[in-house]
Image (cartoon, rainbow, N blue to C red; front, side, top):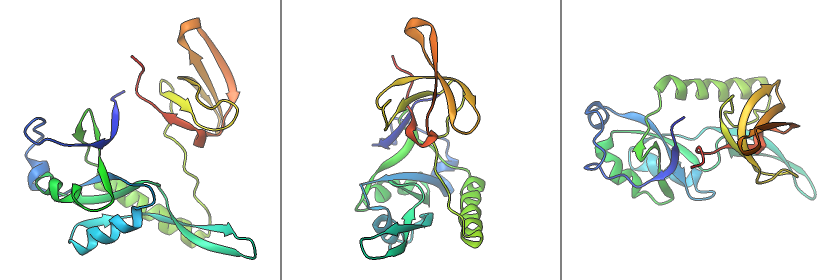
Length: 193
């Protein structure tokens, strides 16, 4: 499984990628500063950079009332469509922390994946249903538990048992533990050295 880096400072000379990425716009995920997703989205649009910030409606309980608020579907991320030629200008936008990549190289996202997210957001709004995010966790994924009594535990997913149950293996002792964990609490991590 390739290591994923979230904030990449990209040196075009060091990591030459296929020419098509420099000549034709592709979608990329950009990591933003905390709570800067909407700002980055607006600044991209002002600069003529195609941008996509999927948002979902969530009911927030305030002291005296309930209010429907729009939250980013992927907190900390905005999608932008540009060529790698314009990457330096993209990284200069206030609020952008970096481009999501693999092994120090920006990772383009298929347009079909972006379109699927668009359709999902529209369908959820029409159906008046909520969307729950969960880590993409499959057998063999290294994960760290973030939250709850198991916070900080790391291991490899040995088996996924239904929607909420995973079996996490701990290699050092050749044993596996089975525990009910919300998938939202599992965060993929690089394979430990």
